[in-house]
Length: 217
Image (spheres, rainbow, N blue to C red):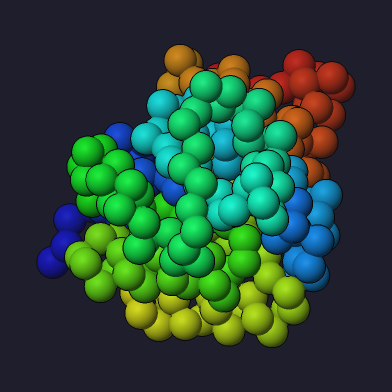
């Protein structure tokens, strides 16, 4: 008979057990992205970047042909990591760039969380490659996008069938916080939720303004 224990399940992410790789959030890739509104995409990318920064998650930023074709990484990401060494590639599959492999190995985390453009190319390639090499893979679906809804959905299905675990940007932030009693990250988690959490953020503003409410803190 299983026994309930007051501790998180092993499938939940923690700040220290994974590497976040944000891939090709760039203008040229965004122009053709139709599966998600671009304002929402930029908002979600900012949410993910801020969550990673707040919780000191090991983070790799990478672009493709930024100077000759695809343009710079979204400012919503760059502004969070202004000193980041962004790896600019020629390969469509991030995982085939030796510099990425070297950095992943140097970080040494067993789990990889991916977000980027496009889902069917820039995310499927490294996700399936990482799974094949024994990593656990998570994909932040609403910080990804593709040229059609069909392309995004089939890409997500393909990765899930291979063992990847889908999640959303707000879920990523709240899974890292997971307990409102964690005072060292409470204030920034609420601030990020208010700024980028859509209706949830509005709810936080309302509760605080109307009756001084807070998330169990």
